[in-house]
Length: 543
Image (cartoon, rainbow, N blue to C red; front, side, top):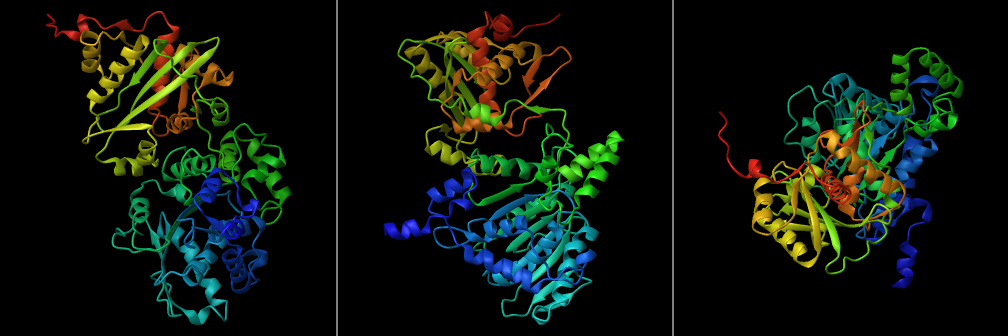
């Protein structure tokens, strides 16, 4: 048995990121044969139709072969294909559309699905037809493939006649709903052009009856940092970094960074793995020089050629800097001095409670508690794309009964902490918290203070948190929920240099980080916005 397990261990060259390492821990393995078979099939039977390669066999580039090998080679413990979703982002003119056209044929003939139903989706009929038409040309130019398909070009449908009863269909978002489809494989071409998410949502959950479905997307960067395409880019990078444990998602993002030197050929290659093949270096250089003479052209060049989307908002902290502070916090001893921050959610969402001990010189130890209503947790997992139930099983989230957060559970935890430690201050965002805070103050004797979330109030503790992280004077123990919050956080600033973490601009939840800022404010300031007064606790008649 040990010899078998050793034999199944993937070659290290296929283990690229934290997601792959997690997959190996779960028993996944790598089989080069399916990937090599797909590559050999494409290069043997698929021909190109355009440019100087028109009529010639398709010769896949190294990066394309690598993508196909990873997509088809990784296997679950039961032998089925590991990846159920993929996101591939690469700049224009790198050959992604030609590769996708060939992949549709591979999906239909080689992926082992009974009655495969393959959909290629685009924002409009014209875009949808680009991939379909190229696939049709590949079929018609092959004496082996042509007898295997019946083509309905006007309807943009093709039926496979090899006994699998497969079909592939080109869809566009500007026609009637696709409800009722039973797709085995779905690929969105140029996902960034999907301004609405209706079509994505229809197909994202339409493959439940399939043994090993695929939902994929191939795109260049969009015009702004929002929409489904950006959601999938962020999700891919978080999966690869290990922020989100999803080893069924293959995310490959070829892009340069805003901080990269736009004149450096190494920057060009980050987003253009086909540079020197489908894109000539001198042509690229000439386009760049032309774009640099016009700011609007340069912004467009950066997006289309380098996959850089210029954004006015910036990430609060680099994830590698955050991870450098993952040392275990020193245990809180009974009676030790601590400070707290509470960020209450809306009734059906995540609430966060942060406890810290220490000071700005020696650094702070961070202890986090999260609360979530138990009912509807599956829907929240889909919405936020994180494993809330797994985190709850790990003891990182307290699930309260019902479909709203029961604040009595939060009050109980604060009571227990107040009884066991010297809780000097608990800072709380006024929003959603008035009744709970009055109860904690009047009945439990907790030193609760409201803390304004205005940028002028939070800038000092926000900057202090950033300084603590950059100097590695905070110990958060690598809490995965807090790490997820940190990866989502976007900072904004005003003309006076004030800074805050903005919940509206941030990508998904940042509640834990907001609670931590409040706790740091409690530990480092003489007072919050104000103690709770009669103006919060009594009804007033204004004349």
